[in-house]
Image 1 (spheres, rainbow, N blue to C red):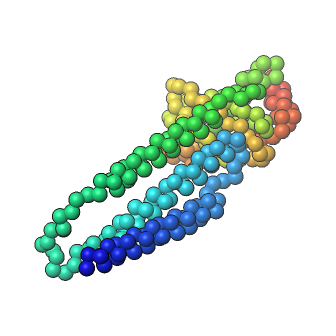
Image 2 (cartoon, rainbow, N blue to C red):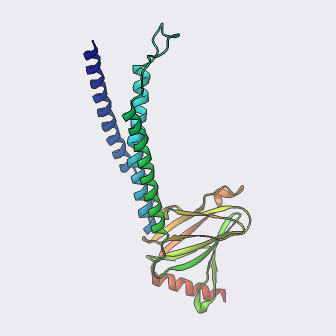
Image 3 (spheres, helix red, strand yellow):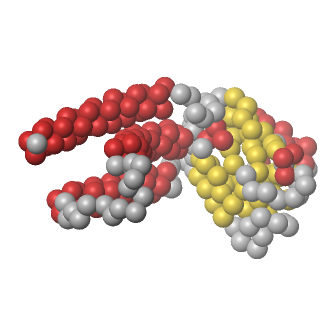
Length: 249
């Protein structure tokens, strides 16, 4: 009888492992196939999307493992009629199993945190040819200032133009309440906080028009606080900046 129970336990364990592996592979494959995000249009966005994929590949098997064990336990060890007043059998924990399920998540968390930190450190590095743009948020609009305009004079605009392939450091401020400067296609965002200047770096890699939105609830007009970033070639950007400088003078 004892041998039969051990054999049944081994079969159950093999079935559980098979279910966990198959469902995990299906979940990872589905997660990687689904196009979750808008168009990726920045160098930093590549690293952010890769980080997301790594997190998903690690988290899906953990979720499947926990969910499978919970469902199996509910089915296999559920209370039967007549057992309402009975205690469970007096068993001792499996020390090796407890060490494993404590060490594995700890190692995974430390590894993922280290990778996330390395990714953040990488995208915050200054690149050659970097330019600055000052961003100001107010209820309910964005405005932009180019401090190095024609003749060294600043140029102000309500539209954001940036050159392709050049890192831009955005110095972000707010005049009233907290806003959040976000370009979904660039995957980068930063809070705009009254009284301080925050900054974020983005490097456009794809020509086109992309929305700029506020990602912090800032009042009744929050949903309308939108702008557009125009990613153009360096020559087109220089021509646009020169035109804006001429018109502002």
